[in-house]
Image (cartoon, rainbow, N blue to C red; front, side, top):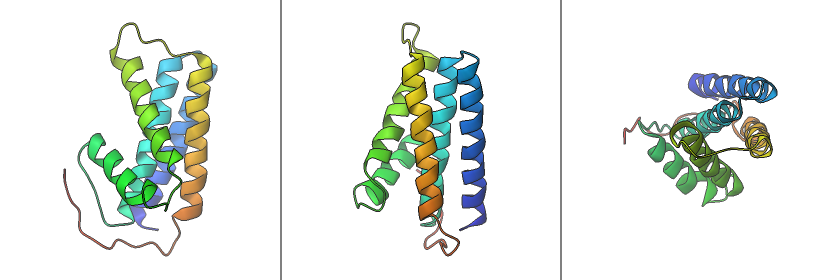
Length: 136
């Protein structure tokens, strides 16, 4: 595991905790936003193990799907979870009439927790970068 992967996993863990707290307080949109960022950081951690970094969310999500979900290295549902959380976060943050329910928010938080579990299983201490940083 690289130092950056370790940091990203810890950031994801904290975002999930914040998401739980926000949901408990009734801040549904904000809870989904934190859950999305947890998943996003986990996707970045997987890519970091390949020596890859990207400057846009679209690039991270696309490359995670290409390198991990489509190849079966990570179950494809995790890419879908990330895409759906991104859509919900965008709707909650930027669209006036987009209303997320507590149940939808809870689902995103649970998915982020599952994503963290699989990242902890698959990102091992022996992972090392194999390429150079790339911007997109």
